[in-house]
Amino acid sequence: MASIPVAFHMEDEDEVDDEYLRTPSTRISRLCFRCDTRSPGEIFPGGFTNREFEAALLETVQETVKAVKKSTGKDIKPVMNPIGGASQESWKKPMLHPFSPGSDGAKIYEPLLAKLRMEQMPKYRNFDFPGNPAMYDIAPSTGVALTYHPQFSPLFPIGRGKEFEPDAWIYAVWVDDAVETYKRQEVDRPEIAGVQEVVVQYVPFHRVLAAVPCKRKQSGPALCPLEFTVGLEATRNPHAGPEHMTDVLAALQPLLGKHRNIVREFDGYKVKPF
Image 1 (cartoon, rainbow, N blue to C red):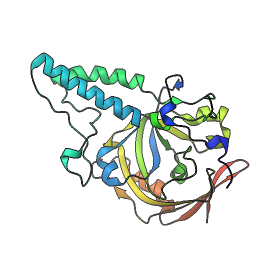
Image 2 (image 1 turned 90 degrees about the vertical axis):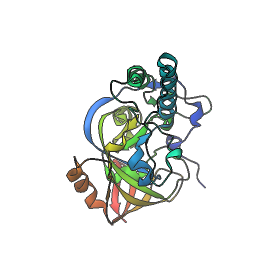
Image 3 (image 1 turned 120 degrees about the vertical axis):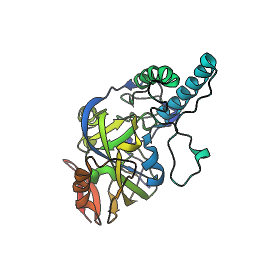
Image 4 (image 1 turned 135 degrees about the vertical axis):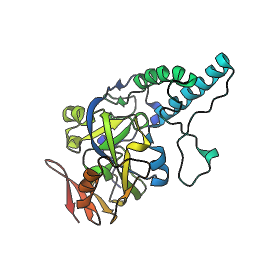
């Protein structure tokens, strides 16, 4: 079997440290797409969070609960994101704003959250790391990757390596602010820049608008060729409002029920009928 191309090497995420370039977000206010193996039962009520940010968020919530108890004697409970089909005792992911506005908890938590969001910006891997090639991409543990184009979403995560789960979902989400990774890639990783990857810290559940099932087949260890088949109908998120749904359906409609192949050509990645 051929070795994994250097550009697609997946390094040990535990080794991603603060020396990587923290990358601030910019305002984009547009529809984006993500392919993910987690089902709508988890994502619709819970949203998307990267692992580093989720762990830090939970720690910040716990610090707030302890601080309120110490200063007021009150036992407060943060609001947790529900997980579809699971008992409330298993809901472990806190909402981004888990305390009521103006409450004792919110007064302590909101400044901590603002500080956390600055500290936990997605980290761009822009240099060689001892023993591993440079990735020239956001470290997956520090950000949630999306694309402006639903037909390219099955490629993600870009650094997935040799294997991934074939059964997935394409999610349509509304994003206000994101790191426009592809603008950096235009300089240091031009072969993938046309996919227009963007990265966020967190997608709140009410910004996850719809999902459609997607089955993928990877032919080898490289990023592509990649076959994918999209389901016949998109499912709306009952926890989200009606805003942007017309745009979601218009974007997904050309893919519904279709079997496609993503290939790399001399001028970039293309999506073709299979």
